[in-house]
Image (tube, rainbow, N blue to C red; front, side):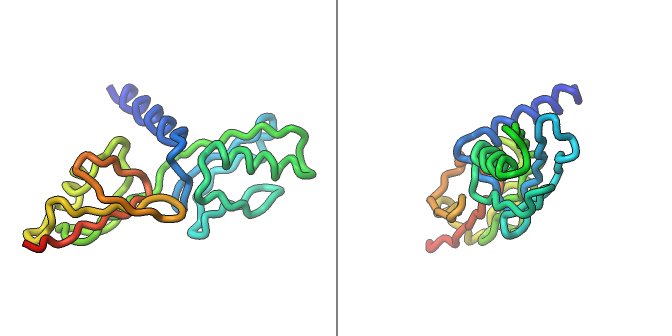
Length: 169
């Protein structure tokens, strides 16, 4: 059973990381491998400025890039005077948290869980306060941040910032 859950988590993480919509951001822990260059293997977190420090090439800004775009950028940087035809693999090992604030009982940051929706995120935050709106919820997502009105079934992604507004009635 534990083996099954680990595999499910692993494949869910791969699916999310391969999702064209998902963008890397500060707090994501990634592993970078370069084929046949074991000394370049790196396990790191994106800094608050969205950068990672890699052997030979130094600081590389990955914030806002998909995993595929980050792979291409790192390959290009290694090919620029360091390696011939580098083959880079990037895997997200752990995702940055999401945040929920406003009219919930326990606002704050929460560890990302695969396939979580807004209703479940509200439950993690202790539920709605008495004066909370039951429909006016906003999620900020992406780089640059864009907001949209959310529903109970809206999927939460790593780095999302959720605002639960007060009810006016």
